[in-house]
Image (tube, rainbow, N blue to C red; front, side, top):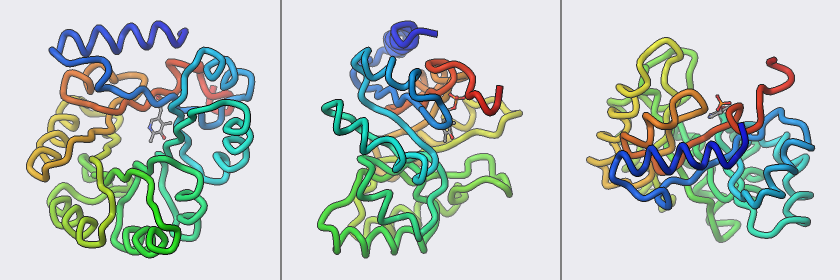
Amino acid sequence: MPLSDVRARIARAAEEAGRSADDVTLIAVSKKQPEDRIRRVLDDGHRDFGENRVQEAQGRWPGYRAEYDGIRLHIIGPLQTNKARQAMELADAIHSVDRPKLAKTLARLAQEIGGCPDLFVQVNTGEEEQKAGVMPAEADGFVADCRALDLPVRGLMCIPPVDEEPALHFALLAKIAKRNGLEGLSMGMSADFESAIALGATHVRVGSAIFGDRPSEA
Ligand SMILES: *Cc1c(COP(=O)(O)O)cnc(C)c1O
């Protein structure tokens, strides 16, 4: 689907929710996508991109940054502490802060580097064993701990279980964010970004709807 169609759908969803489309950042998730598809989106003027692996991001985004101004890179996948420094130096935002050890590492590195990307705390809203994120019941405490470490927590992120109604998870994430005074809501993917916008998403992470199926998964 052309980028302009996704943008139009976002605008319509925002309008229906009585929100401004300017309050919704479209993150084009480029993981595993071939270079020609990414360039097409860059040449269309899009600047927010998401990658879920630091290594893959490191392999191509410094090059694109040298060619295109104003790129904002979002790390959206699980982050190992030994990749944290690389992620911080590479990215403008990290959406997957999900455990105390990572928070402490980010805080130490932020001191050392003298800055920190915008951070989102990932909440495991479906309480799935195999999924990253803090449990909903632990989210308030974890956000407080991150703030005590002076980390710039901007919002929350979730990935709903595949077999459940995503709206329930988006609503839960919005509720947790609200009671913690957080404005950012990173939620909604190709299949459900309109529903996420209806429930307050400020960042939607859309991959296949923009780029087509990821080649290795097609
Ligand atoms: C891959 C991925 C997306 C995008 O998924 P699509 O279904 O292709 O839109 C969004 N968020 C995260 C965390 C991802 O890993």
